[in-house]
Length: 412
Ligand SMILES: N=CN[C@@H](CCC(=O)O)C(=O)O
Ligand SMILES: [Zn+2]
Image (cartoon, rainbow, N blue to C red; front, side):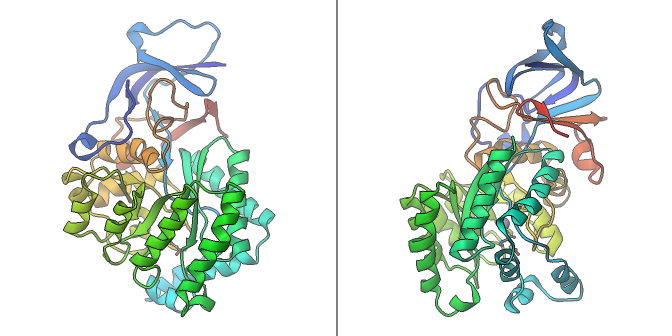
């Protein structure tokens, strides 16, 4: 099957040779073609160019994209979209003055979601989660990482990871699964951290490996959650099963967790609302990518990740949604890109690089996703007619997407 998109006013993120990640000053450069065409064969980007040499392909379906911008689908490298129910009551509690930490210390937060999830059947969990996945696909996400971490029991964690596996089998979007058993300590292990980590290491991980249910391992490295030493134990245990680390760190406090993540060759360090000069230094000369989650900062009113400090130090930065019931009940990458520009002073070029190529790197798929490059998956956003691509972050509340193609096919 051939699909030729013609008269594209702006074709964004065109990379003749693949780039795995974009860092520092290079993030300001977003390569593009004006008045372009794009040829898709089956699920793959076959070719592209400018309209002065548009091929004449008589067996291709044609889409005329005059006035429109075409870009790679978003790569959302950090989500928790498999969850049960919602946390709307905590949302109202925060409006009435409680903080995220206060709610968690009263047994709400992650433990609240874990209670709901353990009471929900695998089938029901799948049904709730697939609605969210379908929504984010319509919003332009073509690759999504999904974490466990609301089970916190052997059965609950396996249930979540099996739902992620089923989503991967049923949907064309690229999905990476991350095991986050170390998301919070269940109440019965509050005073026995070692006991819960033993369950993760000796019971959960072997079963997950046996069923091949995870690609990555994660932990919430934070004051009141998993200490740096505990996070290191989790990363080491994951490594034995071939699971590279992607770690929640520096959301509320800086406790030198980033240094430990770099030491353990983590693929990504995520959140980073609080970043010290030392954290920036240790990230230099590493392959670990920082990931910012601005809609989490927006929703629970915490600082935004200091993007300028990170990028101006020459580091790469990825953007992701953090879609979850507690801190970010939204998987809208368009809003993330806009918020990064508006609140984190990222330019539109930097934000789009962060949400495509760098997002793909942060989930280990930048050889197949994240740019308009021959041979990559045809995961594409076609916008409505735009005055310029700046309109994407500028008109932050508008739905500017006309069509989303995943593996070369338009989704409903
Ligand atoms: N901070 C840790 N985990 C999630 C939120 C968990 C929750 O509140 O349910 C996050 O990335 O924000
Ligand atoms: Zn998260």
